[in-house]
Length: 136
Ligand SMILES: CC(C)(COP(=O)(O)OP(=O)(O)OC[C@H]1O[C@@H](n2cnc3c(N)ncnc32)[C@H](O)[C@@H]1OP(=O)(O)O)[C@@H](O)C(=O)NCCC(=O)NCCS
Image (cartoon, rainbow, N blue to C red; front, side):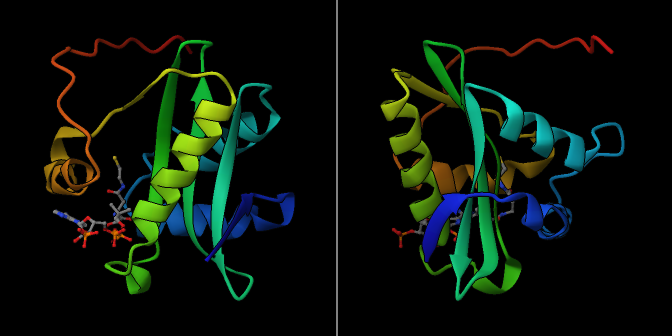
């Protein structure tokens, strides 16, 4: 799998992948999230390509200290072959190269089955509660 920054031509394929992976929510237009990350100076979206076909993504961004990962997804037909691990390694490399010293990510309560994947990769509960408020 080749990993590279998403190009504008891939927007529809990225959104379709995120929808298939169950990562989208009606109140968060995915194409807007994608464009914001691509436009930002401290964020991007990496795509995993097999024979030029998009098979995975991971969004990365940092605030100068912490790095964050969002929208990790592997196409359903490609799961279980190590692509998720490779995408997380690419996310860690991108964040390290951009000066982040910690990586954090959020898992929706309804997606608890993915915790086993992150545990396998060495991630652990950060023992914090995340509070949120919409500003729009
Ligand atoms: C999570 C996801 C990206 C994993 O991708 P994947 O390509 O299937 O994962 P990998 O094959 O790289 O798995 C890496 C390791 O984790 C293990 N693993 C994968 N999913 C697991 C799970 N749900 N529970 C426990 N272990 C898991 C694999 O067995 C593998 O172990 P190994 O390397 O020791 O053999 C994929 O399942 C996905 O796209 N899910 C839907 C979207 C999602 O939930 N994203 C995360 C939002 S927070």
